[in-house]
Length: 110
Image (cartoon, rainbow, N blue to C red; front, side, top):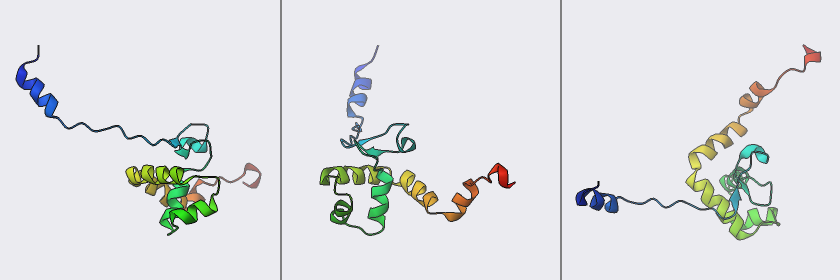
């Protein structure tokens, strides 16, 4: 049985809202399960990469004309909330030595 003091402490505990990204989804069968803009194969990583290179939202929209401003903003919101994870993936993607280490020699060339 809970006492009154425990109930008061529970009521005072900060509540962390579940974040919702209405245009972002993920599916293991699409882009390796990375988060994508719903209905597309455009990854949040892609949008974040463009943004990191200095492209404005308008420039991203000019290059990806099938996207809406809301979709790009949602992707960037997701990126900023998961920045460490996505930056790590982007760093790997741009690391030539990492990709060389992933290449396997074809059996006929061994």
